[in-house]
Length: 402
Image 1 (cartoon, rainbow, N blue to C red):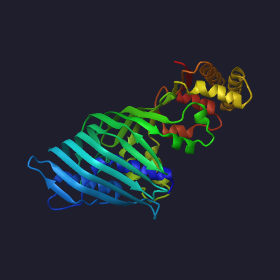
Image 2 (tube, rainbow, N blue to C red):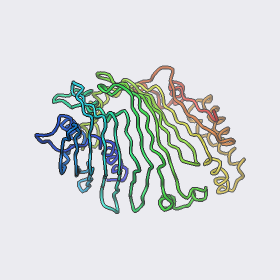
Image 3 (cartoon, rainbow, N blue to C red):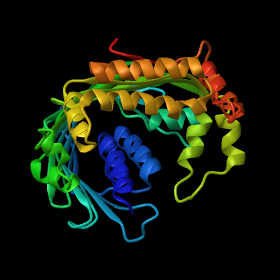
Image 4 (cartoon, one colour):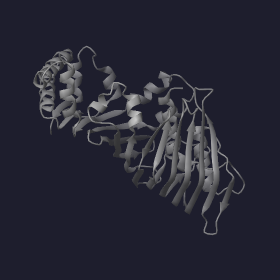
């Protein structure tokens, strides 16, 4: 299994840790049973624990929680998850299978995958959730029920220092925080999150960049913040979302991406969950569900802090040019490349925007915002031999320094 696939699975497990619970037992409170059923639905595994106790104030404490998972599509792959202690306090039954947990505290969370040489390890000493809402998964759930039960919703979630060790290198982040405000029953609402000061050490940079270009640019180590916000609207059988995310490299720049989509069938998400172990989805099942999805916005924006200004003279030197000549050549090459789009107006505006950005690097924005939302079916019906018309229909624009 590739490192990318392993990382994706680790992320799923990590973001689901608030939903981990021990195996069924007669003394399990209904909340624990609800958590377990959702966990089992997601990852097909029952964790074990050393002890489960209910304190005098009604708090539930789980000690020595652990789980060993088989990695999909990798018979030799193994992942282990452990949590030293989980304390769930202020538990209340809101009816219709919805539980509220006023406070959830997690101590010594760990995720291990693969071998020390080919795998990685994640450690989170302390994390917590405030007003976490757990939805029980019934015996005959609808697609909307399954979607809601698998959502990890809390008014606030946070973690302290987090570390990732892979290939002999250690990466760290100072902390994570997420806030949410919405309808606990459906999961609709607004979310903000941020991971602060993700640090990539000098030794890791040297391994990732053997040519030493980053060091020539003045980056012997790297530090990032990642965050974003979004709205999600969930109905009985369809959902939609609108989100914006950012990646900020300190003393480098900020990359922002965003999108808005609607009319997404809950049944599509249910079908996606059934794909475990399958190489390809069945188009006869998926195409009817996908065709009606609407795209209302896609955004790509880069805000320069210094990296472009540092790269231009270095690239010019590598090509034995002065900076002005290299910038002029970049515009000319872009114009030739975009000629194949058969949209002279867009090409001219794109060249003007890129030239303006390279002369005074502040920001570059690419925005697709059609006058009316475009469905996937409409996108598939666009003439591939006439990309210029597609650009106009999608409302694609490019601008600099705005």
